[in-house]
Length: 283
Length: 273
Image (cartoon, rainbow over all chains, first blue to last red; front, side):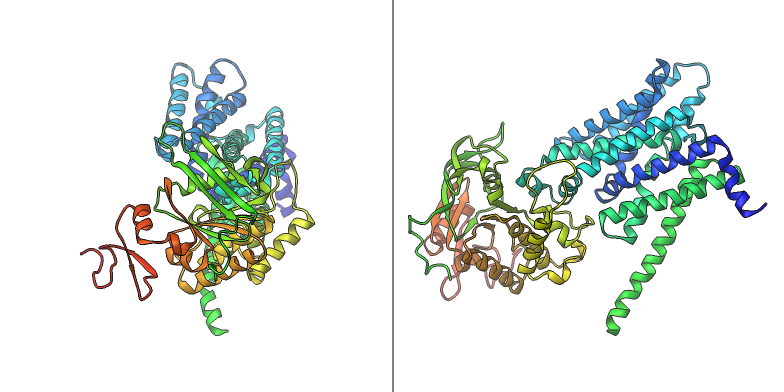
């Protein structure tokens, strides 16, 4: 098989084109939001919000409502709950996250357990089903992506100020609480965007691995976001080829490709770093 | 360098005037009771007190973040709600996330923030002001560094540059000298001195009593209430400081210029004994 043919073959199928489009949207949103997640240590929140969606997904599913909408409502509600718990100090932050997410996840399992039949649609939310992304899913993802990226662009200065120095930000009049809650809601929405394609279990990867890799290469937020998107997009392509040609599940293939990139960059940058003092001494 | 100015000159404009201020948080006893003092324009006043004395409540009141229960705060004669652009706040260095991927220039630009308007970007004027402020504090060569790469003294200077870039006439500094060695502290004080010479007014919360004694024009000792306020030489006495810190403090040194807590770190009696 010729290389060109090997490269083009997957995208002769509509479901593969949709899968790629979906993963590009996921990479974009994951990079923009994930840069804050990585640098504010919010990985646990991302993972918690992802698991919490199962409650909403299950309830929407048994009631014949939109599953994506159910996920969105559950994620945003949990984000607000986490944000509230964070502001009141009676329970520690990660304890609050854990309580919220295991409860919502349990609710999901409880609701599903009442159904006697096998529920493949729900399973696809847990493990992701990139190849099953529909036209409607794609439109929904796109709308949410525009909202997330639009919000970050609109309030970039404020989000950065609150992340860097909340005390000064509130002193000059930035609505610190609003932007802290906003960030959690952005994470919730980013999780929902990636849910259909990547699945509850792996969704945090899209928020963590590409931005963490990019952070090894740059120390400016805007550049981290851009590099992260490129890494996410490249991992998506490689993962989809692996899935198509080697017949493996796509979402773990994408995640593991990103992990491999992270490992290589980590190794390369630590080699460079250990060499630095020697270079400085030679000067 | 401080006491040669006429502190009692009441004709001098007041940058900050706190009168009869009671402030605190709902459901708790007031953190500040009947606090009155002032910072005259172009002067540096040291705010001295133990942890939990109400210093941060006072700062929040001056910044308009919390509202007084009683009394009032005026900045250049105006209520605080109208004076946000005139006040710049420098938090304690620990309150800032130094690992966050922003450069020195990015941080100093934050001082220029004047209100949320979606999609707003920094203007040419903002960038020029930031560059000028960075130069003022001697960090021009580090302007593009990520802030986490800076030393402790440089980090303080970034935060002060941010306040300068704001163009504020009243600077509030929370513990700017904590953890600095004497030489770095001296450099920082030189910058603050220059600022007061240019007409800036500074309120500085610090545990460093000797710095207040030597560098500030005025001192305010706070522990819920004002325990003493006036020229440092009059205020920083054994009596006032003991009341402020609620423990016996002993002046030591040839001119009794240093003050230590009795039984703790006293020369010849190591701690832990």
